[in-house]
Length: 326
Ligand code: MTE
Image 1 (cartoon, protein in one colour):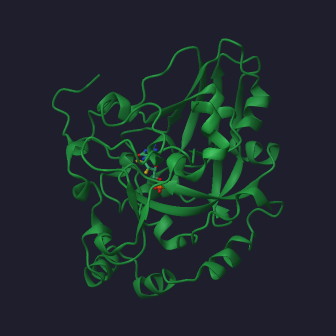
Image 2: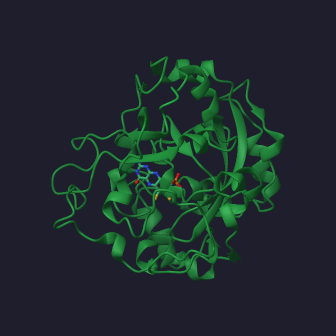
């Protein structure tokens, strides 16, 4: 594991790991958007103030997924849905850079002819073409809380299907105890030579226990806000595990492996004392360098002005997952 001479960005204090929006005043933010070529900065910022009702209207305008249903169990999380502008412009995708503003760089991700290999300890290994996958499993919309380990939070309407549906199709063997998700990685396309994180343990991988994968909440997303998943959010297929910190949700998945042992995973290899394999959202377990007792709701302005809310155990999903950890 390439731990020697790796730039220790994960050792930065919390205020350093939440860059851009976090420290920019509104004016600076607009200037940066404009210089980033986003000529519609003003429109974008206005849109950030959309009310929850308006956002809900957009999510139910489902032109790209005509057969989509909204799962009534996962419709209301007691908080307003985050503006689409923030969910798609404030991202973590280290393959494309170490800031939150990677959305333009991520457009280099080649999503055509995408396939996902499902392999390992299964009776029925598959290589799914992404379009076939989207046909095969009925798609639904689920509004989930989203909590990053960096102590910011959003509420996102995802489009996708339960991980349990895919499990049924591939039939994990009894020996399968864990699953590993592997993200797309090609240093020629992502950051290439000279990239500060080139020595990181790429490709990005994440994993779950098999019982966690089978839980009703565990989800594969192919879209958000009623639209195809943007590249910066992990097109064309990403994992969404809402009771765990956001880093567990591997983006742009190319491989799903069923294993008999816990796999090494990207952040856990880099900093095992900071990013555990389990990584359940828990207000009582501080990150070694900051408290997890509260979270800030991503909106416009500087992060110090973002509304602070108490963190909920399992991100508010205890009734679904508490039994996994009793
Ligand atoms: N997946 C890959 N392949 N690469 C990444 O850098 N970042 C993770 C997760 N999945 C990441 C990834 C982290 S730290 C978070 S918080 C979420 O993606 C961010 O998802 P979002 O950009 O859609 O909000």
